[in-house]
Image 1 (cartoon, helix red, strand yellow):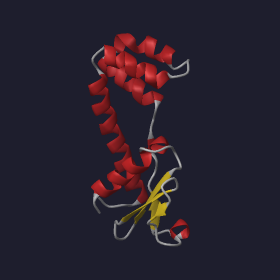
Image 2 (cartoon, helix red, strand yellow; image 1 turned 90 degrees about the vertical axis):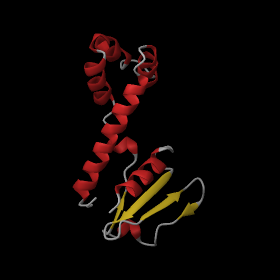
Image 3 (spheres, helix red, strand yellow; image 1 turned 30 degrees about the horizontal axis):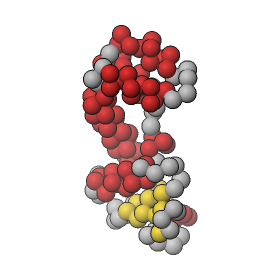
Length: 134
């Protein structure tokens, strides 16, 4: 089974608000089917919701470790900012404010690489847990 097709579907659904897009993968063939409520299309075969051979690919929000991932990055890349970042999470807009801080520290690109790698690890782990051979 090709990881790339699952990864593309993961990004497809995660680039929209949670629940707006859906993707399922057929366990046996690895074929991925997409659907979009907003765009009004659905490639999924009938009955996929109740068929154990089809798995719904998770949205990023379902895998994203959120604050713990940010704190892990800060501890390893700019530990002197840890108290400031923790304080940012006590207010609304924490992720936006953290990204602003990382931009000022010239660490935003490092964060994006770190986050991308971690999300790939989490998606691969999800595949393994679901029994999807890659």
